[in-house]
Length: 124
Image (tube, rainbow, N blue to C red):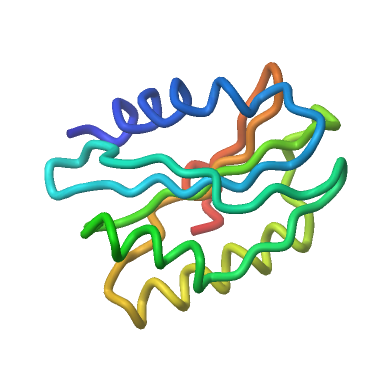
C-alpha cells in the first residue's frame, strides 16, 4: 500500500480528535498488509500538553501484533508545528521502536483544519 493511502486512512480515523479542547495522543497499529488494524487513544492531556510514555504506546502495538505504528495527537490551538516536547517524544518513540522491532512510521499532529507529518517534513 502506498504511504499516502495509509495517511489518508489515518487522517480519516483522526477526525474525532481534530477539534477537541484537550490534547489526545493516539496510537495506530499498522499490520503486515500496510493497513491500520487498531486505533486507540492512549493519553488525554490538557489544553496545551499531554504526557506520553513509550511503555503504554508500545503495549498497544505489541498486543495488536503490529508491524509498525503511527502516532498522532491534536493541537487544540490550531497550530500544527511540533513543539520541542513533541520532537523529544518522537525521538523517544523512535528509539523504543528500534529496540522492540516495531518502528515508528510517522507522527502526525492535527488541528481542526490542518495536519503536520514528521515523516513528510524530514523529521523522521
